[in-house]
Image 1 (cartoon, helix red, strand yellow):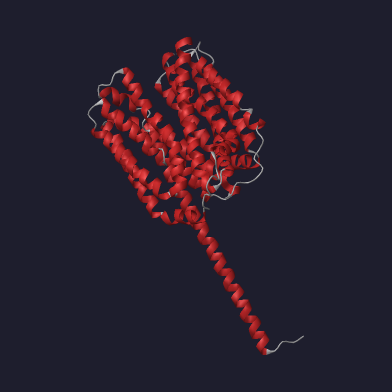
Image 2 (tube, rainbow, N blue to C red):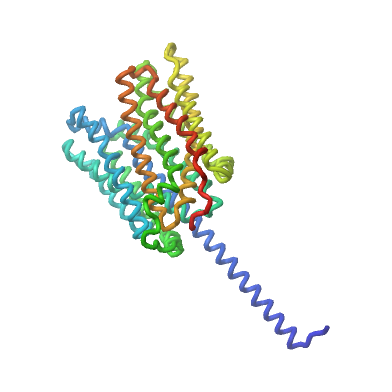
Length: 429
């Protein structure tokens, strides 16, 4: 059938319109993809500075308190004050992030944290330092839940494990860099230089977040409103009990590791370089596992399997690091092997658990979910550290029994993800 000139012209016009609309849609998709990628890079910057700020305190908080004249008991209180206030504030932070959005509370928290950290350089008494440690824990409580809630908002459901794995690798990198930086900077320029450098990094990150605010604003417009009573605590515990129990067990084991391993190595007469090598190896292996495609595929198919094998590797690592005290060279080798296994377990576990929390919590409640997640994270580290101290009192610092006990906790908890019934419905994105 032949077409008239008018019909042919009309069809050509329709074709041109369709082509134009296709191009517009493609450009829109590309723009959204670019915005999402920019936002995820902003999240990674936020994750790095948040955990850099945490890890940079580890080697200097207690010595700084002692230099200000604090007694041994007060030093312990000053060190613990940060974690105690952070634990309580994490839960409140989750409500704020869901009620007022992600960007503004995070930006305010970054700026306030920078001010508090800079003030460390001018304190003149242990009491002033204690107050600042409490304020520091309160201010920074918004950052980790906010970063991971944002990551859950920005990531495509199929890619969440990969995104969370990269965030976990960033944490591992911060854990490697920050303590070393703090030690070198403190020796060469003093405590004040460490605090001011940390504060400057936080200020720079605030500037980066401001530059990327459009990426976060797009996510805010796509997040549905939270109907009254739509995410009760009872419901949250029912849906998130498995991931929460898993992360709590892991952090108890982590608290035991970071508390007892350095003390044990020192008591056995091993040099500080062995301790540094062990924690560096742990961080490097964890980071490599988290960014590997294997982890994302493993976690995406079944998070419970990744959590099971992760906790099992952590238990094996703790047991390996805790055995043997006859020969320093044997202890050194077993410690390095144990640290490597612990890093392998962390690399498998963390992306799977954080991706599962993001999957199960609806977008309008993701801040509360990660607020509670990081409250349990802090609680686990505190319990682990205290437990390591108590067991060491009974069995001796060099015995390795605290590490053995941590391995028992991890291996017992490894069955929880397998026993738990998997949530069947995908949470609202």
